[in-house]
Length: 386
Image (cartoon, rainbow, N blue to C red; front, top):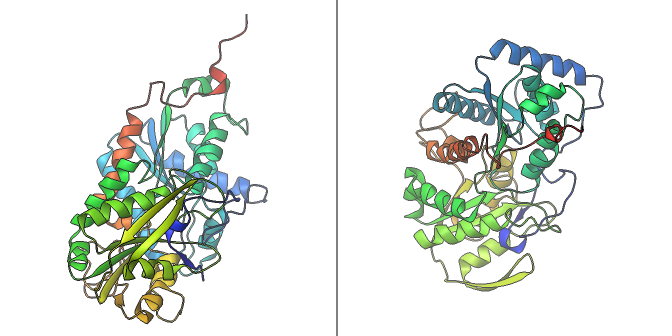
């Protein structure tokens, strides 16, 4: 069980080797299967290539069917909104990839990491490449995609491509940023969430608490955890029934969330800055929980909604005397293909069309950088020595 922590107590994060999430990132690049997987991805790209431009959507990953269906909807949406572009989906978590192949929770399904996809994309000769992050904040996982996978591709780390091809990619590769890349993005997301029919209904009846992931403590991911702070501030300007927290690794801090609901003055440490915030006591006796993650997977179903786990948000909120639910019973836009009206359901961010549009806005902003100094360059573009 991953435990719960209120985000404002941890606006810094520990740079670990991607070990803070439900699926750890153990590198399988040295395994005997590496070439097999490369051949599989290359075959898919060769058979599906229709254009010279490509968008690679990169999610962390999951092993839940609802999440798989959500990712499929994201890809469908991207294809519909970006004609002339091929669209593929990648998982950045090697462990999630391995667990999906092993059939954890549901039938086995093959996903591949960005290195395999970018290699196949380059071998297929794509002329313009957008790597779009499906992360929520610009934290450790996003930085791994940006600073490892894409950087290694642009440096032709494995020597897969000719010098001529690498030169052709100069200023023709860009990265689409996460959902809350900037402070303005947090404000925009707050407005979108507040306009969602189910959320607006819930917040007018009582407390609405969002559960994000967050980064672990110890390393200052400024622009990462701080976005949760900014999102809550923006949401509470719209309605003081909103609260935002995160899941974290080692200890349970859900009582901090409940303390804010009870009211009082608190000191929050944001990097090197201490911020004092006063909450008025909230006397609402009902609460609705939502995941602040792209998909509803292990964290949403277990850490947030599990009635049998005494440390879940659901249990802790109810134990505090707040009648709490973690499921919708009539969500109209469910991505899960087996969903039936009336079934209990946890809608994640990427299941909301208005939120998907925010990610696609970042993709369009990235596309506008192609051919400019804001796009990525390759080391092979230095002037030739005479």
